Amino acid sequence: MAHDVVVIGAGAAGLSAALVLGRARRRVAVVDTGEPRNAPAAHMQGFLSRDGMPPAELLAAGRAEAAGCGVEFVPARVDRVDPGFTVRLSGGAALRARRVLVATGLRDELPALPGVAERWGRDVLHCPYCHGYEVRDQPLGVLGGRPGAAEQALLLRQWSGDVVLIPYAPDRPGGPARDGGPADGAGLTGGERERLAARGVRVADGEAARLVTAPDGRLRGVRLTDGRLIPRAAVFVRPRMVPLDGLLTGLGCVRDGNGLVTTDASGRTGVPGVWAAGNVVNPRAQVITAAGAGSAAAIALNHDLVDEDTALALEAHRAA
Image 1 (cartoon, rainbow, N blue to C red):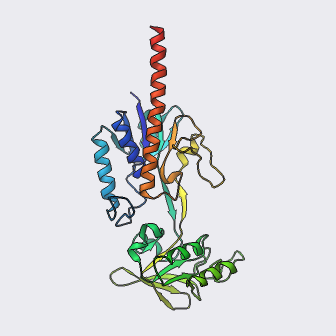
Image 2: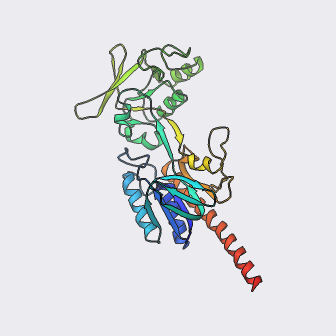
């Protein structure tokens, strides 16, 4: 017997959708690998009534709530989704579904600077709204070399009076850029430098070589290529966010000019029966935003199923 909906991904978006659909008495299966994007983070901020909660606790609570409504959880990886829909799992098993909701999220491509990956989600951060309050009034760094670094530094100035933008050439760590960009790797225009100076944000004279940690593992600062250390309590970076949308594009969903699969406000894609929610189609969505998107998608999905149920019932009624 086919499931009404197979949800792929058990983050905030997928679990929220599963809970709403389970409460609507739909037959739902959630397939997930158990590798959430925010696993390195010790706490989650900005979620009303759950501020400061460890992300794993939120997911555990969501699973328990959805399971209490009859939602089935399948620990597996989805290899592909065939039109129709057959959800093919690694190992050969398959699930049949009337509708599919993809909430697979994204992956963060971090700068190759030594120390960044090791401290990611602890004192190497990316979202001022998620973590700025926790490091307020402390010396903060922003790693340059990626689009939006200047804007991120200007934003962080709201949380601290000591913000330093530290140049970094991502195409060759510890050396000048090879693509004709500025030698310091910051990629700043004159206008950006003026705006930073007006807000009291310093630009380091040098280039980042690696992050330095204390014996207890906490960040000490950023070591420059000339050996100087810029002490920082936290460093913010702009990772390249890559949506995990291969299942969607494999079904024929199209991307927009920004490289994101297009959906309507409810998460409905251009392929009938396929919805998407969360970071897979909105990389900037925070946990609370993703949860709301999952709820909206579930309600739209259920209405779509009601329409189909009614059409089938009407056909049978007329035949009788």
